[in-house]
Image 1 (cartoon, rainbow, N blue to C red):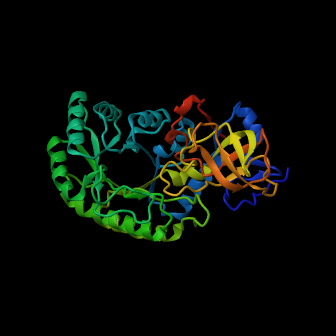
Image 2 (image 1 turned 90 degrees about the vertical axis):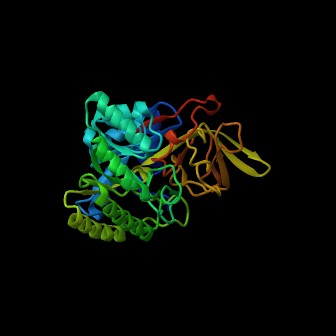
Image 3 (image 1 turned 45 degrees about the vertical axis):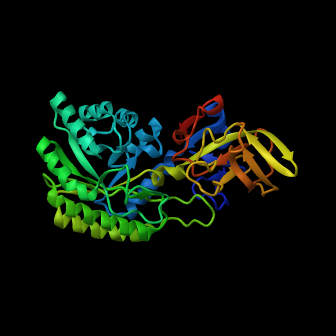
Length: 411
């Protein structure tokens, strides 16, 4: 069997064999039969391994790497990632259960996010994880949970910094935000944590996500470390962990360049030396989600109809925006752009007339690809949406119009 990388410039990770895309070493058609139905998401474990290994090789050895479950909470994916990273970051009680079921040690699990319910905080204290407190209310509730259980809760203070991650897809720090405690208010909250006898663990600063600008990430990481070191002077005990967030982006659209890790690695070497000098007992961590899993996943839908309407060719599939809201352009895009697409069983064919790929939903928003140059495809062919390993199924309105949910597989 002759295997080569596909000629499609849109994606560089999945191999092909003749006409067929390969996922986990399996031809796409065979994988579809193994899954049993379309549409489905497929995640390639070898690509997950390769991404983490490449990141480890590029970044300083002493840096802790955490996986952010919200990017892809499929239990099999989370279980696989626990064996590759140093910690797991969750954003809900449901994700916490997935992380614990995956076998991650509670001490290596952290829980961030505004508005944690009293039940989630009780669950977290009982589990013994690291709780990122984001308000005075959360501090008070955590303390009451600890008293009720006879346990000393471990807490990290999430800081809302006075800066943001420039050139990021979502800016989660700077200005007025629901996330974290404003940096100028942190000293007073640290005093309250000390008075309540909570186990202070460290600081968490997450300023933004999906940035492809290395210089912006380097600047934000440096400012985050300096802010954490400044606030550590008010801490009830020396911080043991400084989590400076993530923000590493992946390219989705034509013209986007891949993130250059070299300047980020150089900056982190300097920051690690700075932290070791000021807080020798503290570890430095980054948390990544999309960057670790996004390019290892695809969404696959089967063409159920091909039609021409007033000169425009439509490929209508059994999948759509209810399964993959991001690819439809309805999750954060101001001007709609196409995710990279292919006909997964015609990878060796030349592009034909431009087509629009839609789903079966009764809404004009249900578009997977608009005016895309794809090989001539017919009923039964398999449309592949690349860059689908993060914020796919779990970020989509799967109950919309009552269509069946897609399956997910890790291969």
